[in-house]
Each structure stands twice: as C-alpha cells, then as structure tokens.
Amino acid sequence: MHGAPEQPNCSPTPAQFRFYTFPSSFRRGKSILVMTGKTIAHLVLFLIVAGIVTATFVNVDPDDSARVATQLPVLMLAGLYLGIMFVSYVLPVLTQKATGAVLGSNERVERDPMRDAQAARARGDYEGAIDIYRKIIESDQDPLNRTPWVEIAKIEYDQLKDPEAAIATLSTALEEQEWPADDTAFFMVRMADIQLEDMEDPEQSAAILNEIIEMFPETRYSANATHKLKEMGHS
Image (cartoon, rainbow, N blue to C red):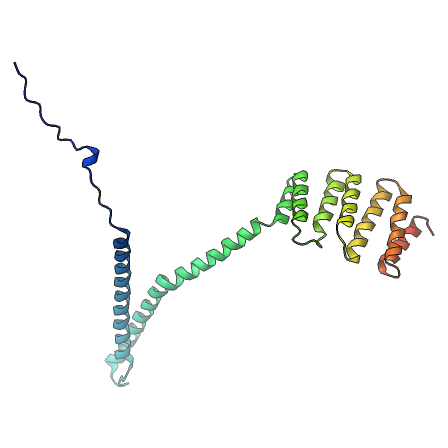
C-alpha cells in the first residue's frame, strides 16, 4: 500500500532569495539627478518671484491704484522667498561653522594639561597633579615656564607637608634650566624661606640669600636678600 505521493518542497531556500543592489555609480547618478532637480526647481521659483517683482515695480504708473495696491503683497512674497532660501541654505552653513568652532574650542580646553593638573589638585589627587606637571616639564614645550615647577613645590609644601621635597624640586629646577634673573631669584628666595621657617636652618637660609647677592649685585633681588638677612640678624 502506497501512501499519498510526496509533495515537492516549495519553500524557498536561502539561495533562492535574490536581493539586487544598485551599483554605487547608479546611486551617485540618482543623487546628482535629485540635486539637479532641486536646483532647477529653485531656479524656476526664483525666476517666477523675480518676474512678479519686476512686473510690479518697474514702469508702474503712480496713478494706477490697482497696481500700487499689489506692491505690498509682492514685497511680502519676495520676503517670504528670501526667508525660505536663508533657512534652507545660509542658516545650515552658519550653524555648522558655529558648532565646529564651539566643539573645537571645547576640544582644546579638554586637552590642556595645565587644566587637568589643576582639576586633579582640586579633587585631592595631589600625586596625580604632580605627575601631570612633571609630564608638562618633560614635554619641553615651554622650558622657561616656571609654573609647573612652582605648582609641584606648592603641592609638596602645602598639601603633602613635605618641605624637603619642595626644596628638592626648586633646586632641581635651578639645576636643569638656565632661568631669567627674576625666576632664579624667585626659586632661591622660596628655598631660603623654607629653610628658615620649616627646616629651622637659618645658616642655610642665609647662605642662599648671600648667593643671591653675589649673583645679582646692585639689583632689587640683592636688595631684598640684604633686607631679609638684616631681619635675620645678619649684617
């Protein structure tokens, strides 16, 4: 006894599905046609508006009240057309440029390592801030910028309560770079102050001040150092 004849499987297999993808050249051509169509449409609209404005305002008899009465609506139509053109073409370009300028500005701010170091210090990450300042120094982008050295010494002195480390940082700054007189005197005076106030070593402080006098004779730096020595009881 034979059963019913087996029906052929009519379900399509994956190989039977065919999806046709238009070539990229066809898609580009289609986009060009769409753009060309829009351009032609706007050109035609412009010619129509220009024709209406010309017909309304050129060679109009001032006594023709009917023609004069149509001038205001025509002006409104022309203004509406110009507004549409501005919103469609000019405004997007201005918006894009403004957005790019803002994003570019934000990007520059985010990449400023000095700001990163200040932020780290503000949130209490003192070691992280010192690391960032040291990377700024190592980058050698502005070797005569004393700020990273000063900020490291401040963190070591104020937050880490380590005056010896602060003195070492200032001394290293003097050894690794030939500074202008103002910066050199600043580093040395700060070292002298820490030696006197925190290390309780007036002799070492006086030695640093005398070195300032020798390095910068007859300047305000030597005058300030001489004044400090007198306050310390040194003649």
